Length: 414
Ligand code: MN
Ligand code: MN
Image 1 (tube, rainbow, N blue to C red):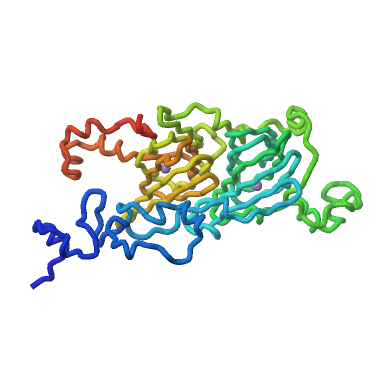
Image 2 (image 1 turned 90 degrees about the vertical axis):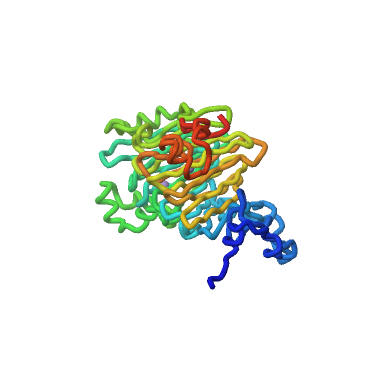
């Protein structure tokens, strides 16, 4: 005789309580798993957590300490943070980063959080990856040169973006009165801010006679160059923007601006629960490898259940706090808590939903290594599939489907 499973017993209508002595409940709505997962299914003696722990960290991750019973299985860590990344501090500013070496799941992009004080300069440099960035504080002057010799100089402020194509040389400088802070996203998971091709490194490592020939000046012109690179250093604040622009305009302007005012743009979604602003290559045309969404969510509201068919989502949590559940085949589902300065990652195609669990507005940035932003909403799918088909899957009355949002509201309730 075949062994009778717990599922069979339940199907026969038996009362599970006696058979499941340690407190596990029958699989039910909101508590679906077998074997059951979640505190609701646990004998309290096994639920306690007396062992060594960091109380501060423990209290910050309620969804890790006690996941909802709908969470199931294991997933690679999709939470990280700039808050725990080591700062490299130099005169003029600091930076910290989370690359794929720090955050294994993040193969598409890496992230850098940098501050430059007033006059602080991130040394002229270039690198193999393209650089996308969002300003979160203050003002910054950026310079970049394209391969046709066309220079671009611009001042950016909070909510503004820049994009420097791979290999294009650039510089950054904090402006008064308070300098600036920003987050850079490289379109390559392994790209490090500590591995860039620096102006001073090259000059110092070129024979003086070659420098003389290359620049058409006597070799001793360079006798006072720094022998070690600068990376970040304290500089003098620049003059008026227009003067800097005019000084380098001889080859004309690049055809596409390297900056974009995302924070000032018209939201593509807006309702009483929040806004969604978008900058992909259809509007920020130079940004060929990065698309981004700046999302705000009111307390208690949710970013609707959705996925992105064409790219993974790298998140930078700017303000407020929230909880994200990620869903994958298996089934696998995991929930994590996020606060300001944290980083999230959702692999391409994985379902996800985010709730603002705080009392203030939640804002986060979603970045995708792709030219075109794409999203499929679960509600949109279910309302654009014949109702009898959907109703048979969910065991609901087909007429109920007419109440589901069919217009991809983005943030709910509308
Ligand atoms: Mn750079
Ligand atoms: Mn998303």
